[in-house]
Image 1 (cartoon, rainbow, N blue to C red):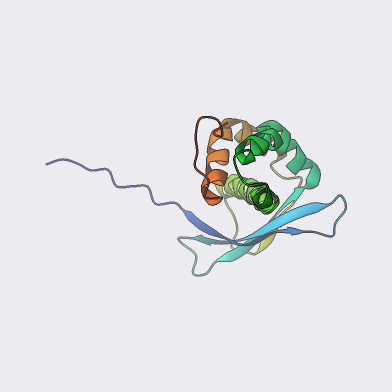
Image 2 (image 1 turned 180 degrees about the vertical axis):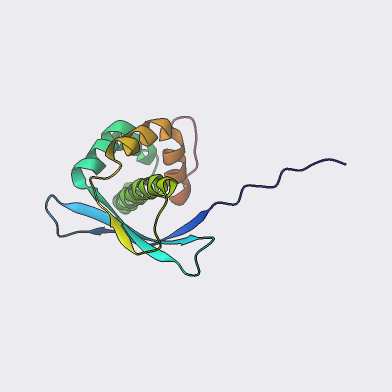
Length: 154
């Protein structure tokens, strides 16, 4: 008889509710809202995850995002590039917010709707970006329905 390991069931489930949206705060922020449910909770909560535009710019720099996108879009018709570029930026912000939410989930959450302010998990997010560059870009390519090849992967 073989023992098949039972997959680990995540403690939290979350889905993107909406975003990114522009906030009215100074410095300028973008935010996403996620629905979060813990297995032991009867109901879910909403978490607002904020990023300053400086944090997004730093993430773009760490990922070499603009040069990578330019390379990805070289083979596409020029009339498609603007819409895809805008969508790709939204996907990046969603991805950054999701990573920040995952960091908060590792620390545990109370069952109440709240906000992860832009100043939380700044250095941890930078570290995650460095560790997951290839996966982040692959996920964005997948969401854009663009094939991945060795020229566009990194």
